[in-house]
Image (cartoon, one colour):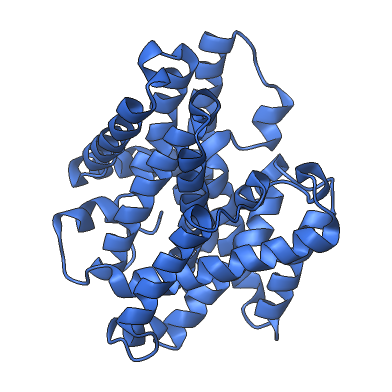
Amino acid sequence: MLDSTESRNCHLDNLKYLLIFLVVFGHFIENFQDIWNSSYIRGAWQFIYLFHMPCFAFISGYFSKKKDIRIFEKVLEKQIIPLVLFQFLFEILNIIYAHKFTGATFALTPYWTLWYLLSLAFWKIFFQMLYKVKFILAISIVLALGVGTVSSLGYPLSISRTIVLFPFFWVGNLCKELSVVEKLKNRKMFPLYLSISVIILMVSFVYVWKIRLPDGMYLNSYCYESIGVSWKKGIFFRLVNLSLAFLCIMSLIILIPQKKLFISEIGRNSVIPYVIHGFILKIFYLHRFEFYKNLYFTFFGGIIFSFLVVYFFGKDRIAKSYNKIMLKICDTVIIKA
Protein backbone atom coordinates (compact mmCIF):
# COMPACT_ATOMS: atom_id res chain seq x y z
CA MET A 1 0.00 0.00 0.00
CA LEU A 2 2.74 2.39 0.95
CA ASP A 3 5.50 1.57 -1.51
CA SER A 4 4.72 4.25 -4.04
CA THR A 5 8.38 5.11 -4.58
CA GLU A 6 9.38 1.60 -5.60
CA SER A 7 9.77 0.58 -9.21
CA ARG A 8 6.35 0.50 -10.78
CA ASN A 9 4.38 -2.59 -11.49
CA CYS A 10 1.08 -1.68 -13.14
CA HIS A 11 -0.29 -5.16 -12.58
CA LEU A 12 0.09 -4.92 -8.81
CA ASP A 13 -0.96 -1.26 -8.85
CA ASN A 14 -4.24 -2.37 -10.41
CA LEU A 15 -4.59 -4.95 -7.66
CA LYS A 16 -3.90 -2.29 -5.03
CA TYR A 17 -6.71 -0.19 -6.48
CA LEU A 18 -9.15 -3.03 -5.94
CA LEU A 19 -7.82 -3.57 -2.42
CA ILE A 20 -8.01 0.08 -1.34
CA PHE A 21 -11.56 0.29 -2.71
CA LEU A 22 -12.44 -2.78 -0.62
CA VAL A 23 -10.75 -1.27 2.43
CA VAL A 24 -12.91 1.86 2.23
CA PHE A 25 -16.09 -0.05 1.41
CA GLY A 26 -15.36 -2.68 4.06
CA HIS A 27 -14.96 0.00 6.73
CA PHE A 28 -18.14 1.67 5.48
CA ILE A 29 -20.32 -1.41 5.92
CA GLU A 30 -18.49 -2.42 9.11
CA ASN A 31 -19.64 0.74 10.85
CA PHE A 32 -23.30 0.18 10.02
CA GLN A 33 -23.76 -3.56 10.46
CA ASP A 34 -25.51 -2.94 13.76
CA ILE A 35 -28.11 -0.76 11.99
CA TRP A 36 -28.70 -3.02 9.00
CA ASN A 37 -28.46 -6.39 10.80
CA SER A 38 -28.25 -8.12 7.42
CA SER A 39 -26.65 -11.53 6.85
CA TYR A 40 -25.84 -10.47 3.28
CA ILE A 41 -23.95 -7.40 4.46
CA ARG A 42 -22.14 -9.42 7.09
CA GLY A 43 -21.22 -11.98 4.43
CA ALA A 44 -19.83 -9.25 2.16
CA TRP A 45 -17.82 -7.84 5.05
CA GLN A 46 -16.38 -11.25 5.92
CA PHE A 47 -15.50 -11.98 2.29
CA ILE A 48 -13.65 -8.65 1.99
CA TYR A 49 -11.84 -9.06 5.28
CA LEU A 50 -10.78 -12.57 4.39
CA PHE A 51 -8.12 -11.40 1.94
CA HIS A 52 -7.82 -7.62 1.48
CA MET A 53 -5.25 -6.85 4.22
CA PRO A 54 -3.33 -10.13 3.77
CA CYS A 55 -3.01 -9.17 0.11
CA PHE A 56 -1.73 -5.70 1.01
CA ALA A 57 0.86 -7.33 3.27
CA PHE A 58 1.82 -9.65 0.40
CA ILE A 59 2.35 -6.73 -2.00
CA SER A 60 4.35 -4.76 0.59
CA GLY A 61 6.62 -7.75 1.04
CA TYR A 62 6.93 -8.14 -2.72
CA PHE A 63 8.35 -4.62 -3.03
CA SER A 64 10.62 -4.81 0.03
CA LYS A 65 14.37 -5.00 -0.49
CA LYS A 66 16.96 -6.96 1.42
CA LYS A 67 20.02 -5.16 2.79
CA ASP A 68 18.37 -1.75 2.72
CA ILE A 69 20.79 0.54 4.57
CA ARG A 70 18.20 3.34 4.62
CA ILE A 71 15.43 1.21 6.09
CA PHE A 72 15.04 3.20 9.31
CA GLU A 73 14.94 6.51 7.46
CA LYS A 74 12.35 5.13 5.03
CA VAL A 75 10.22 3.66 7.80
CA LEU A 76 10.35 6.96 9.66
CA GLU A 77 9.25 8.91 6.59
CA LYS A 78 6.64 6.54 5.18
CA GLN A 79 5.16 4.86 8.24
CA ILE A 80 6.06 6.39 11.63
CA ILE A 81 5.62 10.09 10.86
CA PRO A 82 2.29 9.57 9.04
CA LEU A 83 1.17 7.34 11.92
CA VAL A 84 1.96 9.97 14.57
CA LEU A 85 0.48 12.80 12.50
CA PHE A 86 -2.80 11.07 11.70
CA GLN A 87 -3.02 9.58 15.17
CA PHE A 88 -2.91 13.14 16.49
CA LEU A 89 -5.57 14.28 14.00
CA PHE A 90 -7.81 11.37 14.97
CA GLU A 91 -7.36 12.35 18.60
CA ILE A 92 -8.51 15.88 17.82
CA LEU A 93 -11.55 14.46 16.03
CA ASN A 94 -12.27 12.30 19.05
CA ILE A 95 -12.07 15.30 21.38
CA ILE A 96 -14.43 17.33 19.17
CA TYR A 97 -17.09 14.64 18.84
CA ALA A 98 -16.65 12.44 21.91
CA HIS A 99 -15.28 15.15 24.24
CA LYS A 100 -12.58 12.89 25.61
CA PHE A 101 -8.85 12.29 25.27
CA THR A 102 -7.80 8.64 24.99
CA GLY A 103 -4.48 9.10 26.81
CA ALA A 104 -2.67 5.77 26.97
CA THR A 105 -4.52 4.53 23.89
CA PHE A 106 -3.02 7.42 21.94
CA ALA A 107 0.46 6.30 22.90
CA LEU A 108 0.07 2.53 22.60
CA THR A 109 -2.71 1.70 20.16
CA PRO A 110 -3.01 2.88 16.55
CA TYR A 111 -6.37 4.52 15.98
CA TRP A 112 -8.73 2.33 13.94
CA THR A 113 -7.39 2.28 10.35
CA LEU A 114 -3.85 3.33 11.27
CA TRP A 115 -2.74 -0.06 12.57
CA TYR A 116 -1.39 -1.02 9.15
CA LEU A 117 1.19 1.78 9.24
CA LEU A 118 2.68 0.45 12.46
CA SER A 119 2.51 -3.18 11.37
CA LEU A 120 4.22 -2.33 8.09
CA ALA A 121 7.00 -0.53 9.97
CA PHE A 122 7.55 -3.64 12.11
CA TRP A 123 7.49 -5.95 9.07
CA LYS A 124 10.08 -3.93 7.19
CA ILE A 125 12.44 -3.75 10.15
CA PHE A 126 11.98 -7.41 11.12
CA PHE A 127 12.54 -8.41 7.49
CA GLN A 128 15.94 -6.69 7.47
CA MET A 129 16.88 -8.45 10.69
CA LEU A 130 15.56 -11.92 9.91
CA TYR A 131 15.81 -12.61 6.18
CA LYS A 132 18.91 -14.80 6.69
CA VAL A 133 17.26 -16.94 9.38
CA LYS A 134 16.46 -20.47 8.25
CA PHE A 135 12.86 -21.65 8.30
CA ILE A 136 11.66 -18.13 9.13
CA LEU A 137 8.49 -18.60 7.07
CA ALA A 138 7.56 -21.75 8.99
CA ILE A 139 8.35 -19.99 12.27
CA SER A 140 6.20 -16.98 11.31
CA ILE A 141 3.25 -19.26 10.47
CA VAL A 142 3.54 -21.04 13.84
CA LEU A 143 3.61 -17.65 15.58
CA ALA A 144 0.60 -16.46 13.55
CA LEU A 145 -1.38 -19.48 14.72
CA GLY A 146 -0.12 -19.31 18.30
CA VAL A 147 -0.50 -15.60 19.02
CA GLY A 148 -4.25 -16.06 19.49
CA THR A 149 -3.61 -18.18 22.57
CA VAL A 150 -2.03 -15.21 24.39
CA SER A 151 -4.74 -12.99 25.86
CA SER A 152 -2.38 -10.10 26.63
CA LEU A 153 -1.56 -9.54 22.95
CA GLY A 154 -4.09 -7.66 20.85
CA TYR A 155 -4.66 -4.07 19.84
CA PRO A 156 -1.75 -2.41 21.73
CA LEU A 157 1.05 -1.66 19.27
CA SER A 158 -0.89 -3.74 16.72
CA ILE A 159 1.09 -6.77 17.90
CA SER A 160 -1.46 -9.44 17.07
CA ARG A 161 -2.12 -8.22 13.52
CA THR A 162 1.59 -7.75 12.92
CA ILE A 163 2.32 -11.36 13.85
CA VAL A 164 -0.71 -12.89 12.08
CA LEU A 165 -0.07 -11.15 8.75
CA PHE A 166 3.74 -11.34 8.75
CA PRO A 167 3.75 -14.66 6.81
CA PHE A 168 2.01 -12.89 3.90
CA PHE A 169 4.68 -10.19 3.89
CA TRP A 170 7.36 -12.87 3.83
CA VAL A 171 5.63 -14.92 1.13
CA GLY A 172 5.29 -11.76 -0.98
CA ASN A 173 9.05 -11.26 -0.99
CA LEU A 174 9.66 -14.95 -1.57
CA CYS A 175 7.31 -14.87 -4.57
CA LYS A 176 9.33 -12.01 -6.02
CA GLU A 177 12.57 -14.00 -5.67
CA LEU A 178 11.01 -17.04 -7.32
CA SER A 179 9.22 -14.98 -10.03
CA VAL A 180 5.92 -16.47 -8.93
CA VAL A 181 3.90 -13.40 -9.93
CA GLU A 182 5.36 -13.50 -13.44
CA LYS A 183 4.52 -17.19 -13.72
CA LEU A 184 1.01 -16.50 -12.50
CA LYS A 185 0.65 -13.78 -15.12
CA ASN A 186 1.44 -16.34 -17.77
CA ARG A 187 -0.89 -18.80 -16.01
CA LYS A 188 1.80 -21.44 -15.84
CA MET A 189 1.22 -22.21 -12.16
CA PHE A 190 -2.45 -21.44 -11.61
CA PRO A 191 -4.80 -21.75 -14.62
CA LEU A 192 -7.50 -19.14 -15.20
CA TYR A 193 -10.36 -21.57 -14.65
CA LEU A 194 -8.85 -22.56 -11.30
CA SER A 195 -8.56 -18.96 -10.12
CA ILE A 196 -12.19 -18.28 -11.07
CA SER A 197 -13.20 -21.46 -9.27
CA VAL A 198 -11.45 -20.28 -6.10
CA ILE A 199 -13.35 -16.97 -6.07
CA ILE A 200 -16.65 -18.75 -6.71
CA LEU A 201 -15.80 -21.17 -3.90
CA MET A 202 -15.11 -18.29 -1.52
CA VAL A 203 -18.44 -16.65 -2.35
CA SER A 204 -20.23 -19.98 -1.96
CA PHE A 205 -18.43 -20.49 1.33
CA VAL A 206 -20.11 -17.34 2.67
CA TYR A 207 -23.48 -17.19 0.90
CA VAL A 208 -24.50 -20.68 -0.23
CA TRP A 209 -23.23 -22.88 2.57
CA LYS A 210 -23.37 -19.97 5.05
CA ILE A 211 -20.16 -21.10 6.71
CA ARG A 212 -19.15 -18.15 8.88
CA LEU A 213 -16.12 -17.90 11.11
CA PRO A 214 -16.36 -15.62 14.17
CA ASP A 215 -16.04 -11.96 13.13
CA GLY A 216 -13.03 -11.49 15.39
CA MET A 217 -11.12 -14.08 13.36
CA TYR A 218 -11.12 -11.76 10.35
CA LEU A 219 -9.76 -8.80 12.32
CA ASN A 220 -6.71 -10.75 13.56
CA SER A 221 -6.53 -8.60 16.68
CA TYR A 222 -8.29 -10.74 19.28
CA CYS A 223 -7.21 -13.78 21.25
CA TYR A 224 -9.22 -16.95 20.64
CA GLU A 225 -10.81 -16.87 24.09
CA SER A 226 -12.22 -13.37 23.57
CA ILE A 227 -14.08 -14.42 20.40
CA GLY A 228 -15.60 -17.42 22.12
CA VAL A 229 -13.60 -20.36 20.74
CA SER A 230 -11.15 -22.78 22.30
CA TRP A 231 -7.49 -22.52 21.40
CA LYS A 232 -7.75 -25.69 19.31
CA LYS A 233 -10.68 -24.38 17.28
CA GLY A 234 -9.02 -20.96 17.09
CA ILE A 235 -5.83 -22.38 15.59
CA PHE A 236 -7.87 -24.44 13.12
CA PHE A 237 -10.04 -21.47 12.11
CA ARG A 238 -6.99 -19.25 11.67
CA LEU A 239 -5.22 -21.87 9.57
CA VAL A 240 -8.31 -22.09 7.34
CA ASN A 241 -8.50 -18.30 7.18
CA LEU A 242 -4.85 -17.87 6.20
CA SER A 243 -5.04 -20.66 3.62
CA LEU A 244 -8.15 -19.23 1.96
CA ALA A 245 -6.60 -15.77 1.94
CA PHE A 246 -3.51 -17.12 0.17
CA LEU A 247 -5.65 -18.84 -2.48
CA CYS A 248 -7.59 -15.60 -3.01
CA ILE A 249 -4.35 -13.65 -3.47
CA MET A 250 -3.06 -16.08 -6.08
CA SER A 251 -6.41 -15.99 -7.89
CA LEU A 252 -6.61 -12.19 -7.90
CA ILE A 253 -3.10 -11.88 -9.32
CA ILE A 254 -4.30 -13.87 -12.32
CA LEU A 255 -7.66 -12.12 -12.72
CA ILE A 256 -6.48 -8.51 -12.35
CA PRO A 257 -5.60 -6.72 -15.65
CA GLN A 258 -1.85 -6.44 -16.26
CA LYS A 259 -1.70 -3.36 -18.46
CA LYS A 260 -1.63 0.26 -17.33
CA LEU A 261 -5.14 1.62 -16.69
CA PHE A 262 -6.57 4.75 -15.08
CA ILE A 263 -6.82 2.78 -11.84
CA SER A 264 -3.05 2.16 -11.86
CA GLU A 265 -2.41 5.72 -10.73
CA ILE A 266 -4.82 5.35 -7.84
CA GLY A 267 -3.40 2.01 -6.78
CA ARG A 268 0.07 3.53 -6.83
CA ASN A 269 -1.07 6.24 -4.39
CA SER A 270 -3.29 4.05 -2.20
CA VAL A 271 -1.76 5.29 1.06
CA ILE A 272 -3.56 8.66 0.83
CA PRO A 273 -7.15 7.37 0.58
CA TYR A 274 -6.20 4.81 3.22
CA VAL A 275 -5.29 7.38 5.87
CA ILE A 276 -7.95 9.93 4.84
CA HIS A 277 -11.10 7.84 4.52
CA GLY A 278 -11.22 7.03 8.21
CA PHE A 279 -11.84 10.68 9.09
CA ILE A 280 -14.77 10.97 6.70
CA LEU A 281 -16.32 7.69 7.82
CA LYS A 282 -15.87 8.57 11.48
CA ILE A 283 -17.83 11.80 11.03
CA PHE A 284 -20.58 9.98 9.12
CA TYR A 285 -20.74 7.28 11.75
CA LEU A 286 -20.88 9.69 14.68
CA HIS A 287 -23.75 11.62 13.11
CA ARG A 288 -25.75 8.47 12.31
CA PHE A 289 -27.74 10.14 9.55
CA GLU A 290 -31.27 8.79 9.09
CA PHE A 291 -30.74 7.56 5.54
CA TYR A 292 -28.30 4.95 6.83
CA LYS A 293 -31.30 2.97 8.03
CA ASN A 294 -32.19 2.24 4.40
CA LEU A 295 -30.00 -0.80 3.70
CA TYR A 296 -30.09 -0.82 -0.10
CA PHE A 297 -29.80 2.93 -0.56
CA THR A 298 -26.84 3.10 1.78
CA PHE A 299 -25.18 -0.05 0.41
CA PHE A 300 -25.05 1.29 -3.14
CA GLY A 301 -24.33 4.76 -1.80
CA GLY A 302 -21.37 3.23 0.00
CA ILE A 303 -20.07 1.84 -3.28
CA ILE A 304 -20.27 5.30 -4.86
CA PHE A 305 -18.74 6.91 -1.77
CA SER A 306 -15.83 4.45 -1.77
CA PHE A 307 -15.17 5.00 -5.47
CA LEU A 308 -15.16 8.79 -5.09
CA VAL A 309 -12.91 8.83 -2.03
CA VAL A 310 -10.42 6.43 -3.59
CA TYR A 311 -10.48 8.22 -6.95
CA PHE A 312 -10.07 11.76 -5.60
CA PHE A 313 -7.43 11.11 -2.95
CA GLY A 314 -5.54 8.63 -5.12
CA LYS A 315 -4.67 11.13 -7.84
CA ASP A 316 -1.03 12.03 -8.45
CA ARG A 317 -1.53 15.71 -7.59
CA ILE A 318 -2.77 14.78 -4.12
CA ALA A 319 0.04 12.26 -3.68
CA LYS A 320 2.70 14.85 -4.60
CA SER A 321 1.42 17.26 -1.97
CA TYR A 322 1.19 14.49 0.62
CA ASN A 323 4.73 13.27 -0.09
CA LYS A 324 6.15 16.80 0.11
CA ILE A 325 4.57 17.36 3.50
CA MET A 326 5.81 14.03 4.89
CA LEU A 327 9.31 14.57 3.50
CA LYS A 328 9.49 18.04 5.00
CA ILE A 329 8.37 16.78 8.40
CA CYS A 330 10.84 13.90 8.17
CA ASP A 331 13.73 16.24 7.32
CA THR A 332 12.80 18.49 10.22
CA VAL A 333 12.66 15.58 12.66
CA ILE A 334 15.99 14.14 11.47
CA ILE A 335 17.75 17.52 11.61
CA LYS A 336 16.45 18.27 15.11
CA ALA A 337 17.35 14.79 16.28
